[in-house]
Image (cartoon, rainbow, N blue to C red; front, side):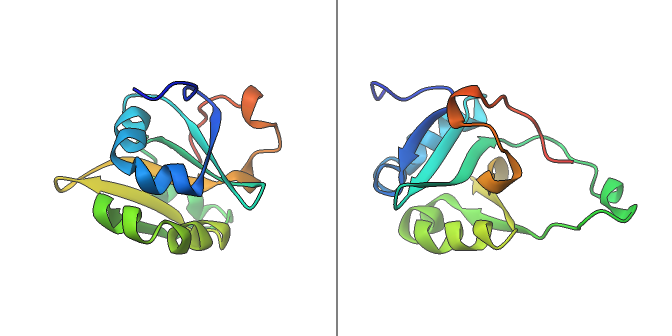
Length: 121
């Protein structure tokens, strides 16, 4: 286990690429990671929570959910973060099942140290 990394700690893009499987495994177990790119908080990796997608039909913005394999995330992490910045949610697939997701950090106004694991509605 990496030292200095835990619930609500920021990680950089390079760390995500080099230890993708570790961060996804830990996120699926309930930890939350905040991804920093070029000094800016851009995304949050969290456990996949069952979301009722029909709840968004009452006038709220509908979000695009993209499924990505773990290996694709490792090789193209920057591109996936660009998609998250554009408002998409990335569901991470391991052995055919969605286990975690990446959401935009712009949805949350608190600094990473004070964020709680709140599912998107």
